[in-house]
Length: 471
Image 1: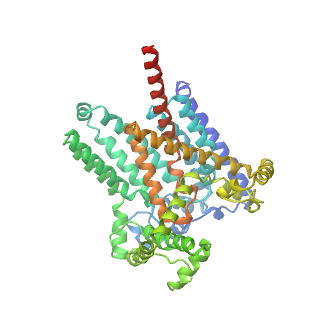
Image 2 (image 1 turned 135 degrees about the vertical axis):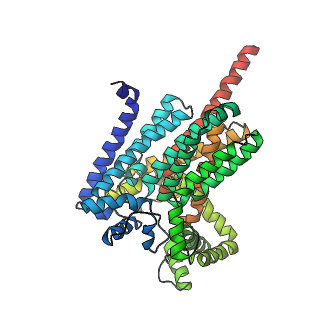
Image 3 (image 1 turned 120 degrees about the horizontal axis):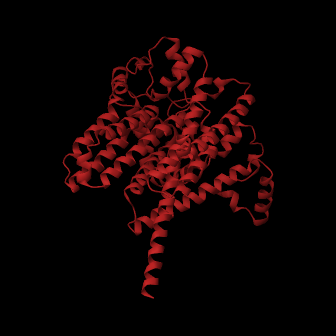
């Protein structure tokens, strides 16, 4: 009973998240005649099936038999047991839904760990439980759910580590948190097994720590940095080795070159030539001698990268325009339409202006559109889109305020670096960016916004107190 009392809010958030995800999964599965293979996407299921079909061991080194360097091995390894023992992905989807339901709990705990008030921490947890984006991503067999789960766990323990660092040199050297440092690195490594987005982040963290150790004159910190890097990358070395043996190139994934060539370049050309994205992509591939988007592997990645850089270098203005659109989309898209589409409730969406054009209608047209939406499931799209637009504005205000007032603390600074890391790496996806790319840092954005609001409120109270004292 004491455990239930202690974690009652966490349990409630988890049960709400689980209930919503299971109910909606049941509805979507019913619409698809309970064909669970229809939930597969991005090729991870096919990799797992080939491992089982050809009796390939899930050992990372042996997984080298699959000649593809786009997809990383983390998710297929989790899928394999369900296909091998049950010949179905139903059990995997249920596991993924459970993991997705734990993400709001971790988000709440993370908010508490950085000293946010309980009421705001609870609100973040409840929002993450009912957020349409998290619900819609809990069903397809893609990396977002597991990737986000391990990323937020890593961030949670990194916050604990940062707290120890902030207490000073003496406290840090007395505690010797080698285990915590190794755990942080390991969790980042596991997240990178799911998706290669974080492949450079441990190096970025290490650079910051080395600079800190030099300024704080803590030579022992270099040892911790080495432990962190080893824990982050050691788990990835079998895949590096596999890629070297198969493609004779040292590299982790060729997805970066793939999106630069197949997504960013067509986005730039679409803006330049006033074409649709699909038309620009088709014409670009044909001009390059391809009938469709080519599969880019590591042994060919350098060529594709050079071709992409040529286009970017020759079109800097259109690249900046594409990057601006990508960043706007990253911070404001909501994922509601994706969920409605899975539920087959998106009828009529094409009848309304999209994006900011919706608000550029005449006043009369805007009122009519809002009245139509009010009685439609599509109102969910407008509701969540407005929420994320408002959140994006508040994020920028929080960023500017904390920068001007030098109000960044060790936690808000860390969150800002991680959020910007995701936002800036997303630019490579051009016009293909959607809310899915922001999901791993949704909780961090909400926390950062409230941190800025707290900093402003503290300053306001301090000034008010000073005025009262002077009077």
